[in-house]
Image 1: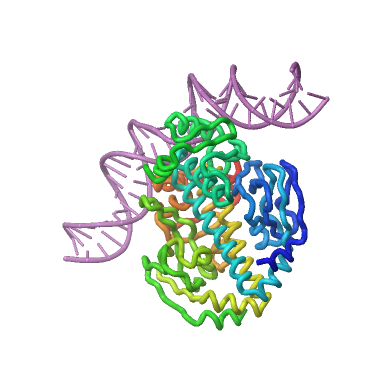
Image 2: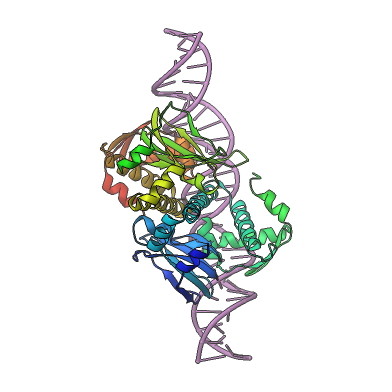
Length: 208
Length: 208
DNA sequence: AAATGCGTTTGATATAGGTCAAAAACCGTG
DNA sequence: CACGGTTTTTGACCTATATCAAACGCATTT
């Protein structure tokens, strides 16, 4: 794995709002997030946008671009961030030498597919409250895996971006959060969330 | 590419309704569809199901299983079908020797990610008519790429399965198809579809 | 040929979430 | 620290799709 470090020679810094890449740009590299927070979104010609994910440190973005040698979505920094650039041809070359690295790469791509299937499930058959609960629990779990508190965190994205990701309008996101607050599941003060009843929030998911 | 053929020693036949694999089973192989038609679906503990895709000859399924060494969804034959089994460890070994094969595999996985993003866009921000139009146009295009008529085809899946895939109820699928028929875009007789005005059907997508 | 059963169509009605609008809170900047 | 723009909240109302229900078609079995 430290050989992978050799690959990631290039580090780059981004300010909030900067684009890491844009749809259509030629593909050369994957990117590992070192610090900060990104969103990826696809844009429909008619202007509609769909947020396809929120990425945090340790996660890899750009996998979509391999298929057509061009990025197929935009990646935007949601806060000041640092990334490591991983030239893909060198990654492929190295993974021919190192079966462990090869397997690792395949797992990362596969995990992305599984994640997407989860979101399809969410978008295709869950109600607004369930979607929000899944979203918050997922954030909580990923932050906790990075050493942050699972219970209290700062949302780096707008209601509108959350809504786009979850297939809801921003007003619905706002209302549902307020509703969770009234139920005593959590407290929200704009971007600050504190989960107060994790179990009950969990039980929300799948409870028709 | 004919070296890949060497890998796919095992061919297997399936009857309609047979499971190619089930969620949770240990992962050993990918599968290339040779003839026939499959669906993949993820099941939520509470019984809800989400169809994540419909696969036809030439397409590869099982990529989701790499991440956790177990299949994460079910694959079910929608008609009598034949598949080629591709033992994954041998595929990885061979792709270490053959950069072309390696690249090919990566593209296939990446294409699956891009496809999933398209579905997220569909589920997250399109209306019922648009979803149906996208679905039919996509089927048409893939069938046409395989030498079948792009205009007339047989639906191998139920309204319920289409609905699950598109995040709609079966009644909505049925009604929307009837509506397309009344508009003269196509004719539907249960499972037989004939697209009569491809252009207008296309113009449906993205037309708010 | 009748009976059984799944899948489909269509109608009537209900509702979750969308839309429109306005006020309030927040944030970056001069 | 005041200002202007953005984001969030909340309210009132509306609509697309879900839900419930019944009839129908088609295929398979007896």
